[in-house]
Length: 305
Image (cartoon, rainbow, N blue to C red):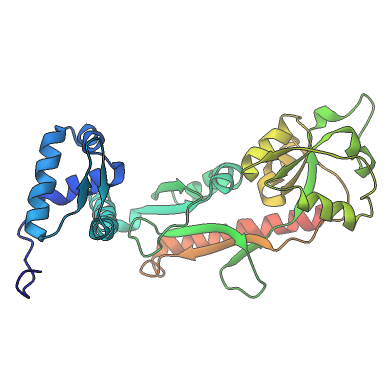
């Protein structure tokens, strides 16, 4: 503000350069992305700062940092450009209804959604699917997302609840000795026990089955369910994994399930929708399809229990 009056922004030309430089924290890297010179980027940002009446970056000899106001503007501009790019993409496709943008976690995308997606596209071949696998929580107000499937704590009665997970112990058939048809809890001390993040759930399962006494090898932890399941398929040990992540491998015979009581578990999947897209046919079709797929998986889980 100058003299109590807001200075109008007369040009948007510097906003793309600013957002890019803010994202990279560097005029040089922004210049590479935008195919310009660092000096041109710096000049555009300087013009923008002059138009706004406040500094966006603090310039150091070898790097730049956002000012407090620069940080606020960078967030707003990134959101605005994201919506603008999504809208342009939809218009280029000719119809907002023809593109379905799905956000979900890496593990769920790789081990559950992608192996089944051909069944949905066979039903609705006219839809162009854009799948964003990202463990970061997305902004469902953003035009770039239609629906999201999120993993985390769930409660019964939640209208967004798709599936309450259960942890199961699984292994590759390659671990079976000649003539052996299955592994049991008694076999656990013979193999590394694989887990996601912490062995605590293994201890709960062993306690549930009164099998805590024993020498167990908890030497292998993994950051994602999908990586954990792949390690089990590769025969690296016996894994305690979420059923939804392992079910396709079980159906294909790549994994076998140990018959035992499961540990208490309060996480699962929720289906979230961009509130502005709630009534669009593409969203309603995908919701109906994924709920039917989840119901089928629930029946398979109950049969295996």
